[in-house]
Length: 296
Image 1: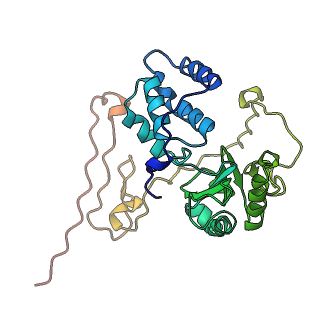
Image 2: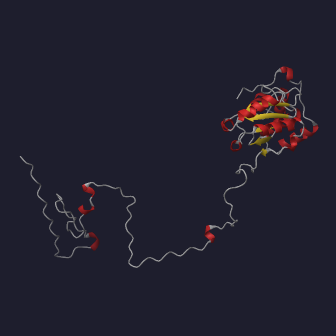
Image 3: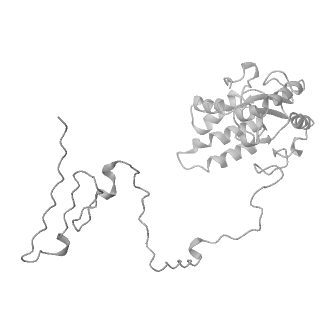
């Protein structure tokens, strides 16, 4: 996007003043903001100045700053940041802002700019011979899903073809721009599919909260059925030391397969059965399997 500066001195008026109607509107707008926050009205007040004169002059910026008690530079920062504010004289009937950001560019915005060059002027911001039309390239205008699009005044015209934009420009040139319906220029509602919706086409069913529905009875469990243990969180391993057969049962008998070295049964857990009976002796541990000797 090009650098935005104020118009040259030859275009700047000597002063600026709101009309009586707009002055009353400005007072009502400022009163909408709480005490100490009146400067938040700077954007709508600045836009009102543009609506009155057709563009924002240096004198208009200074007037808005004086009304709101702001430094001139603060209002200038806002006016130069937003492309909706025109800083030099533009077409009196239409100033066409063509979005040139990626989505619109991929959808053919360059062809829209070619239309503007042929019907208005080769250069941006330059007005046609009658002074009624001008155009510029701007950054994203927020209607990417309906690309390519342009903005004229405060309205957007979307889903454009070069032919349709040419018709729109001719209509504004004839002073009949209000007859054009803004928004998508194809058969769709806002951003819905062209031709109408393609899903949720059945009969409407009123929404019912889940808690309003009676709970469904649980299915009866089969007699004698057991729930298998879940192994979803157990890692899969084929290592010998993770073989479940190496674990001895609580009765002290080894469950190790034949040929497993150093297999020892686990001791019986007597802590859960209370104190041991008098005269009872613990079972002797099974002797460890001899360790094979290494060959000499």
